[in-house]
Image 1 (tube, helix red, strand yellow):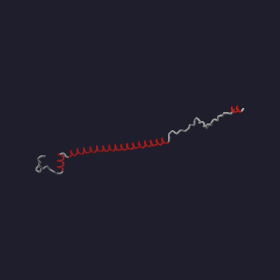
Image 2 (tube, one colour):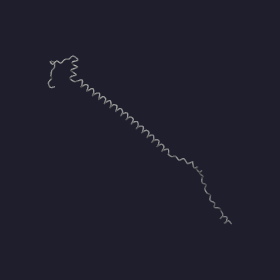
Image 3 (cartoon, one colour):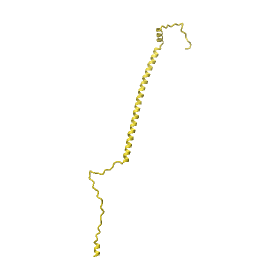
Image 4 (cartoon, rainbow, N blue to C red):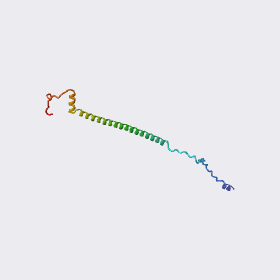
Length: 123
């Protein structure tokens, strides 16, 4: 009988208990971070550099526009001055004709005295 009892010794295997994880609800998903903190820092740095460079470019472009406008105004002033200079030189030529000089001389009371006129050779 001892042999029979030994045969009947239960060979019961204890199963290890697995920790039960609560089942997730369908609407509730585990929140996974989209970007790591290092990536966020890189994005912020890139965005700030982009803003800085674009503002520098816009600033220099504005300065160039101001300079171009100033160059154009100076160019128009030069054209006006050159027109005025040519008009004045034309007036000088008109005023300095031989007939005009004689008219002014007669108005001032000067007379042509051929005895006082000397001819200079070589001219």
